[in-house]
Image (cartoon, rainbow, N blue to C red; front, side, top):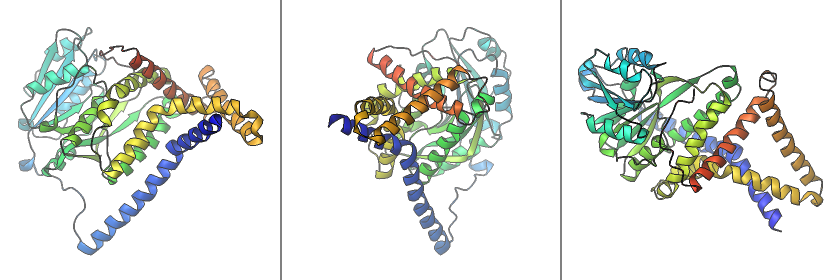
Length: 391
């Protein structure tokens, strides 16, 4: 009886996480969009957040944390120079978290009054670096980016227009990822799926997390991060919700970043995300959320975090139920085929690049294993607050 319960609960939740929730979300989104369209037809009120003229643009502080970013730092500085934002209203802080390559030399040599290098003497972690940069920020709107992220020229304009509404505390931008052939057949597919979910959730007012590479924050929403806050782009928006502010997503505020070169590199990042997620869980579950946001948190976040345990339980229960009939035999065969195909993708990555779904199965297994490793690190109390590049 116990094996039956574990099997069916596991199968239901795994299916719900990857298939049924996106379908449910699409149905709710379609009804909400139809209602919005009908309201527009009857009132003729513009549904889009209008662009702000130069005279209306608020002063902004752009914060870029960096650790050993010499390979991309000059491109980022050039990208900042190309931003379509009044220079007299833009403060840019590059904060180096104890970099040991040429990052500090590059920053010290910048001859631009709008750019302020902040060179920390030793590695203290991204959270500390962000805290120090916010302390130096002079303006009420903060924009966060990464050194490897290239903003579209109008990205900051698109982000800050939403702060004309005093209820908005966080604005999340859209990050496009670029990568090589392995990326396009693994994370590239998964990222498009992920962005579709985020867009539908945004239309329902259920945006939970930002991409740390491009988001803006009303400074009144910022609370100093602790060294344990490894997922600042999730913790910061959720704390803004606790303060009563809205979190919105603007797909027109765009940036580009090169993804990890391989699934192995992405694995490192996912372990860190998993560790930070479990550390923050106690705080996050106490954040007051509207019904649709609660649905998104349970379906898009919490279930993803426990999915590895569900997959293990499903497989173990299936083994115990082999004498229960053909259905259980077929289900075990399907699971074995999936993991075998993922193993083929891992062992023969170069040879099976052109085989449909071979690398994608490998990627899905890898990110779930990463969450298991992250959970073990969380249980062990490992304090790996330092951050590093993975690509």
